[in-house]
Length: 99
Image (cartoon, rainbow, N blue to C red; front, top):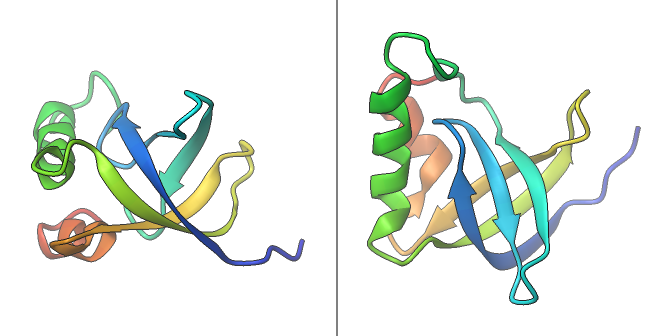
């Protein structure tokens, strides 16, 4: 499947350390997954730490991020690279050991 890369600004809500919803100004949401990131799922050891880590990265900016959509996964979630004024969230999660 071919997928055109798109970038846009949005708000984000995380469900765990590597997935959540992108929410536009009209309160429409679309599920996403961070590219190249693998964090524990709900109920697994480390879940809360990973979710708190990623929420901390976006919290200073009220959840506002720039999303670069690069594809879609088998669950029809957007595959994204997220960034804010501090840089790429995906890269920072990798530096923290989530990959």
